[in-house]
Image 1 (cartoon, rainbow, N blue to C red):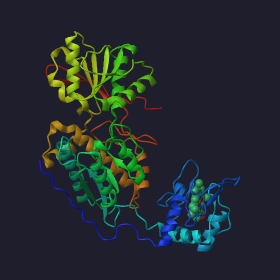
Image 2: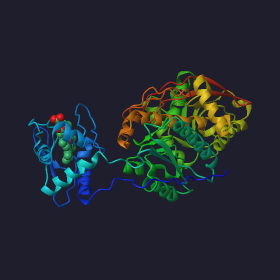
Image 3: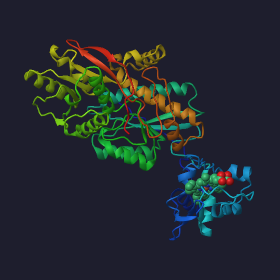
Image 4: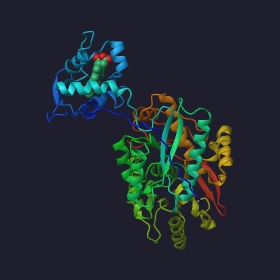
Length: 491
Ligand code: HEC
């Protein structure tokens, strides 16, 4: 499989060029820090309590983009200089008065939710200079006629085949959008970098994507070796990512159309209890491979929150395990080995697993396991509307993709759908902060290929459950036995 990497060509001016004074003002605005050694203070609320300004930087309320970030019933206004100067008659002098004494140009007292800042003359001058430029400041990747997205896709190794599919889906979707004029007058551009095969090379690729290549947001990267580091790096850069959650923990920066594995297994466990009448103490969480251990603990915790009381999690080491219903985490190979070990011991409990982990090993299961294996699927073909099917078929035809591997195609399409929906909503004035807010606000998104996707404050997975599908052997043949329904999320 050959890969050609697009070397993105960027126009000249990237980030806003700031004078040293404006730069200092930016630091004050974002971090509450003075150029002198002095600690700046802010007085807050009706009582006028003093706190370091670094605890309450302007950006915390007015947003790094200066467009105001409403929280509860406090609504910090936009600090766009045009609006302040022309709309409200702000000048250098009365701006200083507003920031330091809380009085606006018309002589009104500003709400005490706006702190009063004690600033030196130099700090005030720098801050004012920066506020005048703030409106021009754009996040990386947002240019006059281009909006740049980035992703990490390995060109070799075990993930290369899947990466090729993801790339084809993204490029196809972007080509379609650009043919229709892009989004708010900007053409989308995709920068693809190879994360290599180890954590260090992946981290380097991610830094390059964000710093040199100036990706505005990330879409559907495949870099499992970054794992927890990914969340940290995204948070540092405040970059949103739409795509799959890394195994060890999500992040507020990551929006995933699909449910995570713990949620999928919880759907199966509730089906075991409610439909198959597996007793609450008959469920076991079993995992194969050390890397699955934290996930297994997470599943057990979720079960406990639902009043199910599984025994401690168990590592599968080739020996049969007991229990009437086994919730399995691990690879397809180990899943078949577990089934074999159980069968050799004359046991046929229910086996539950996520289709994404074990589907590859089902052909090897003996017929005795027919209807005893139940899998979680985030979506099934029954979810597909006529329009969804047409979209998928068009994609497969244009990109020569195998219709039997629809799963990854659908999840990538959904990620792209979420991102473009949010980009359309934020308008031309695109910033990462606004994109995050728009993604968080996406509700009841009809993809035509999955159940409706929903996000919300703190909610980062579009689906909160999975379909339960029984496996009939030999075959395998699949029957959906319980439709998708949201399961309770983490409290
Ligand atoms: C704790 C939240 C908070 C912080 C921190 C904060 N502000 Fe405000 N700011 C507000 C709120 C709320 C208002 C609206 C007050 C009102 O409507 O009376 C406001 C109003 C203003 C106004 C008046 C705008 C207008 O339309 O008249 C300016 C100017 C301003 N802030 C600048 C700043 C600057 C510069 C900083 C940092 C040095 C800062 N603010 C820090 C919450 C904050």
